[in-house]
Image 1 (cartoon, one colour):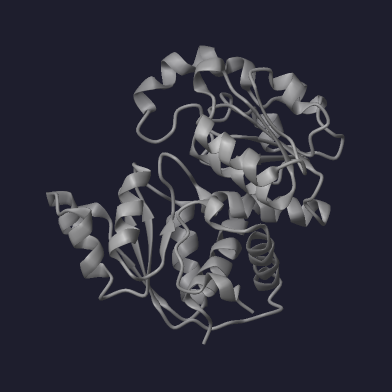
Image 2: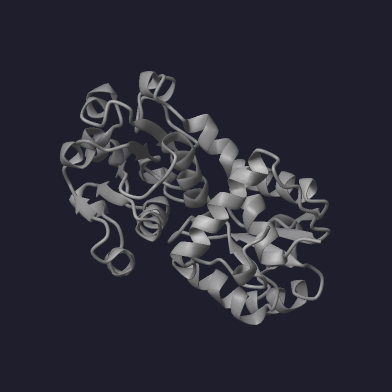
Length: 308
């Protein structure tokens, strides 16, 4: 039922997974969603969030409740983290109370340090570098639509941020072509791109470009995110003119495959990175994508913890 090879491990990056493990997680998520399986996992999940959250917080909480476990919301304002307790101290203490922890923070190094000092599984619930849980839900959504993933093309337009990084790695793992179109000064981390290219090998294409039309042509999924991520809100006004050519609108969608779907990780700024018409249009799968956070993360919890 669970992915046995993942039991007791961390998920700090999608690159921590193999292709087989990624596909097995997606299969389990689909089975959980359709209620083909109903595992029990009477464990305690801690949510240590230093960034605001709606979908991640709620989906993780509901997931562990539905598995028969409990959740502790350990946001910084109610813990000693807000007073500067070192990560290495927090990690070693929570390791003795919790069964698993999901961390939403800024620097990737912080979550890696926590995982080094804690023996329990640690999940990256978002850092400035990656958002692996989001990408798992995204892949599940594409798989639901097309039946399989291999050979499809996903195009992301906008800021080469944490979501873009995890999509690059996720697509490489499952044999999807991935195209990322960003302004020249906002492209993904070259180290992440190189890692994805190494994973993909000759099977699939990993394309980084500054031309959204080239990226969109024939794509099976068009994806975007906000132009200023959390912590960058003060830069939003200056970014809008730079990113305007990368808006996911009706014109850009017309270049994609006629059966293409539209994705957005939310929250969205309607009229900025995506138009109202595309977001609410018949090709949008944004709300299915949001729901799939629950199912993908439930599969991840079952696999990291093991089922009763």
